[in-house]
Image 1 (spheres, rainbow, N blue to C red):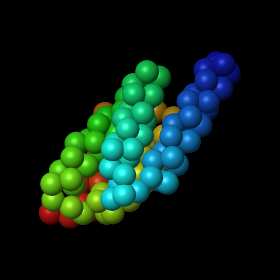
Image 2 (cartoon, rainbow, N blue to C red; image 1 turned 120 degrees about the vertical axis):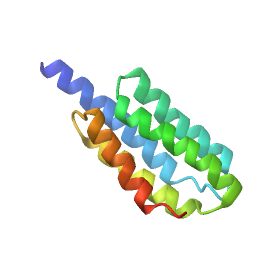
Image 3 (cartoon, helix red, strand yellow; image 1 turned 180 degrees about the vertical axis):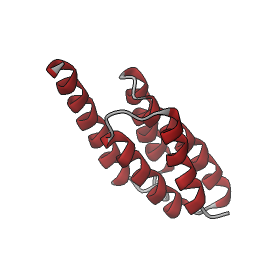
Image 4 (cartoon, rainbow, N blue to C red; image 1 turned 135 degrees about the vertical axis):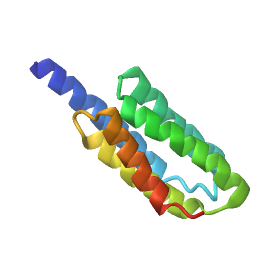
Amino acid sequence: MEMDHDRQMLIRAELSDLLEALRLTSFDTNPLQFLVRLEAIRKTAMVHQFATVAEIASVFEATMQRVIDHGGGDSVVSSFTGILEDAIGCSQLSPSVTQSLLASVAVRLPN
C-alpha cells in the first residue's frame, strides 16, 4: 500500500512540475510551446492512469484551439490551470467530480 502511495506522490510531483512549466509559458508569445507542454501533461496523466487530469487537459487543449481563432487566452489559461492543479492534488476523482470540475471551468470562460 505504501508503495502505491509513494508512486502516486511521485506522479503528482511530476504532473505538478509539468503544470508549473506550462504556467511559465506564455500562450500569446509561444502558442506551440504552450500546447506541447499541455500535451505532455495529458500524455503523462494517461500513462499513469490519472484519467481525470488527462480528460481536463484534453478539454483544455481543445479550448486553446478555439482561443487561437477567437482570443481570450488569459482567462482560459487561468481557469484551466487552477482546475488542473486541483485535479492533480486529489487522490481519486469519480467521473461526476470530473464533470463538475469541467463545468466550473465552463462557467468562468468568456462566451
